[in-house]
Structures are given as C-alpha cells and as structure tokens.
Amino acid sequence: MYSKLIKMKNIYIKAVVLLICFSQFYRNACAQPSYYMRSAFSTDSIIIFFDNNYISVDGEDIKSQPYDVRMPFPDFRYLIYGPELRISIYRMDELLRNGGVSHTSAYKDTVQKDSPFFDIKKLEYKIEKNKTTENQWRPVVQAGSYIDTFLYRVYKKEDRIFYRKGILLYEANLSDKDSVTVSFRKGKADAFLHLRFVKKDPLLSPPCYMGSFHNQDKEFPVEKFIQEAYKHYLTRDQSFYRYWPGSNIKQNDKVFEDSKLAFFFRPRTDIANDTAFEYRLLTNGKASQWKKSDNIIYAYDLKAGNQYRLEVRYTDKPQYAYHYQFYVPANWYQSAWFKAAIAFVLLLIALLLYFFFKNIRRKRLQAEQVNKMKALSAQLNPHFVFNALGSIQGLLNDGQIENANHYLSGFGKLLRNTLTSTEKNTITLQEEMSNIEHYIKLEQLRKDFNYIVEVQDSINLQEIEMLPLLFQPVIENAIKHGPKGDEAFAMKLKINRNNDNMEISIEDNGKGFDVHSPKNGQGLKLTKARIDLFNLTTKHKRIVQKISSNGNGTIFNLTFINWLRND
Image: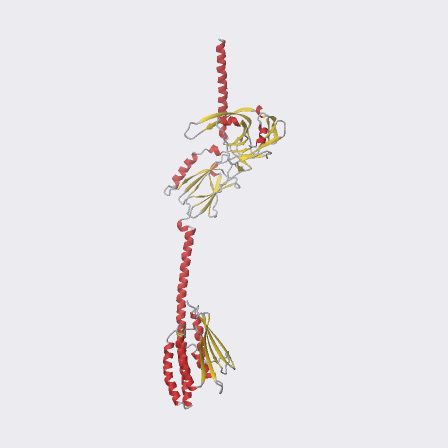
C-alpha cells in the first residue's frame, strides 16, 4: 500500500511539473505576439534579450549583423515603440543546445579579457524606471526563472519547438516617455554596462507604411482593382505593425504607365479612420491639393516620362509626412537620346537649309557681280577705242601717214581681241600680256618710249587666269599722261611670286599725279570698281590695289592673294 502511495505521489509531482511547464508555455505563447523584435547584447558565455514590438537605436533601426564592442562600454540607448518590454538573460550554451540563437539585431563582445565580467553566477543587476530605482542591486541568478519557447522551422522539414530555460529580469507595460535603465556589475564593483530604453509614441512619426498592391494590366478596371486591393489589405497582419513608427523610403522605384497602385498604412484607432489621412501626388515637382482619405491610398492614370512623389500625413498631425518617390519611364520617343537625336536632325536640316540658301544667294550675288563686271568691261571698250583713235589722230596730225596706216591695221586686230576678251569672265595671263604687248607696239608707232617686261621664272603665264583688260587701262593712262616734256619715258611691268600670292607692278618715270584726286582718269576708276566687285564674289581669292606717285614717277601695284595656291 505504501509503495502505491509513493508511486501515485511521483505521478502527481510529474503532472504538476508538466502543468507548470504547460502554463508557462501558454503564458509565453499568449504574450509573445506583442514582441515582434528581439534585440540582444551577447558575449561568448551569456546573452541578454530585450523584446518589444519595435526597437531602434537613437532613432535608427539596429542593423541585423552584430556590432562588435568591447569594454569600456558606452551607454546603449534604445527607443521602443510598443508598450510591453521584456528583458531576459540566458546562458549561451543553453541556447546553442536548444535551437540556436535568433535575434533581429545585437551588440556583441567577444574580447577574451572581458569575459570574466559576464560570469552569470557573480553578475548583479539593478532596474530604474523614470530615474527611480525599482529594485536594488541583486544577483541575476536570484531573478525569476523563465522558459523561452523557440520555433525551429526549416524548409521541407518538420517544425520543432524548443524550450530554453532562462532568467526573466524585467517585464512591464510602459507609457509614452517612460524610461527604463538596466545596469550590470560584477560582485560589488561599479556598474560596467547600462542598457537604457525610452518609450516613444509611434504616432509622433510619419504614417506607418504596411505595404502595397500593384496591377499592370491595362484592361483591368479601376473599380475591380480597388476591390482586389482591399482584399489584399485584409490579408495583412495589422497587429504586426501596431506600434511601428513610420519612416520614409529613400529609393526611386520604377512603375509602368498602365500601373495601378494601392498603398496601405496602419489604420488609426484613436480617431475616425475614414478621414484620418491626407495625401497628395506631386507630378514632376508640381504640387496638387491635399485630399482626405482613409489608410489606403490609390494612384493610377500615370503618364510616361513623369516623376512622382506621394506624400501622406495624418490630418491631426500634418508635421509628420510620409514620402515615397516613383517614376514612369519615358516612351522611346520621350527619351533624352531620342530628343537629342531629333534636335540634332533639326539642327542639321536648319544648317543645310541655311547653307543651301546662302549658296543660292552667293551664286546670285556672284552672277550680279559678274554682270556688273561685264558692264564695266564693256565700258572699257569705248575708253580703249577713244584712246586709240586719239593716237591715230595724233599720227595724222604729225603727217605720219604710213605709221597711221600701220596703227589702224594693228588697231583692228587688237580691237577684235579686246572685244573677244571682254565677253569672257577670265582669260589667261598669257592672253592679257599678249594684248598689252600688241597695244604697246602700236603706241610706240606714235611715241618713242621704252617698255620692259620682267616675269619670274616660277610664273606660268598660260596657267594663271586673269580678269580681262584688268591693268591695260593703267598702261594706257601711263602712256597718255605720264611723259614729261622731252625726257625719255620708260615703263616696266614686273610679275613676281610671293608664296601663294602673285604681285604685278607697273612702274614709270613720268611726272606722276595726285592719287587722292577725284579727277583721276576714267580707266583707273573702272579698274578699281572691277577689283572691288571681284572681291565681293569670292572668299578665297582677293585683289589688293595700291598706287604710289610723285614727281619722279608712278608705281601701280596689284597683289593677287592666294592666286597661286594649288587647291
């Protein structure tokens, strides 16, 4: 009988232990949904967990990879947004034997010389809330035991639940602006580690973005899209975002012209949710009016090539605004390269048209100048004939009948050559020199004077084009007006090359004249006018005229610029 009682007692004890474990598991399972984030401070021997719905460091999310730290430690400051805070401590080997270590973020000290400070048997802690001590220094091992349930899930394998034994240091509900500080020391020494927590109101931040729903089907009606988006919204676990603060997304996402977008934000429960939000959609920086809405914002009817920015804020807290940027790529005909190509083509067409009409205008001007030069050349013929007739009359008056007949016969041939030359735009320099030579011989029948021609060897008279009768009027004018009294009259015509230029000078030892006098002969005026007109018809070739004259004679220089260039 006694043995049966002992056996029943053992069964009873085991049942109580199982009941306690089950109740502890049930307690954790019921409480744990509030703790969606677990941060940690760990060493090689222990790990301290602090659980809350949302934890950040100095306003920034803690990175998922551990920060390596070492003593002396700074104060570790955390912002928490959920009302429930739980702080627990475990032996590292306990966790490694039962599913391993899992947390969202952590600070980690692996320095060997720091490890003695974290001997859990000698470690003490103290809790302060709002700068008031809640419990004095006490050994960690004297705090209440705690069973942590850990779900170990591996793809395509059966889930496993581990029960890890730890120590619960603190668990409480906090109000906004509450602060909790957990300090640790070894034995009776000074504290070497401080974990400080401050409770923040998640509504004192931009609206919390919970996700979005997109549809890119052009034929999908907007009304049906709104219905589908709402169904998708209902599948969201809103309790997960219950205490999350809002933050802005910095990237610039790409969507498409036919996209329809729905943005989900955590609903407000403290005020009427259907008008708790305001939003506006900026297009290429141009703002629109704020519109009231509930916590689902829709955007559609987007245009290609536009940059958008969605701004969402609370109606009663407009200073906290959520910003999200996205853009619709430009169509190929809106792209920068296409616009640049069109601009280049238009510029090219404009340049072609410009040069086309400029060339037409230049040819028209050239034709006009050529006609004017021909008219001036036609004026030279009467001038030449008048001078020739004057020479014949002079021979007849002197009784030189035979010379007059020779002159008249030669004059007929020279007149035919002159008329033929003036009908052309250009003649060879050889033809021009031949006509001048012929004219000189006729004039020498009437007057006795010397005429010398010097041509540089590099000058090929046959290959050089020349305006007809260009400097014959100069020679006529020199023969007619140059001689002074009984002094022997002499003329020299020189043709030289100077790089690509040709220089022609006509020199005499006559009495000279005033080069600035407006009463200069008609032949010189016609020559200058023809040179000026020629210079208007071309850019590459020009003729420069220079006359110097005094009582010892006259020098008439013509410089033909670029006349000998081989283009």
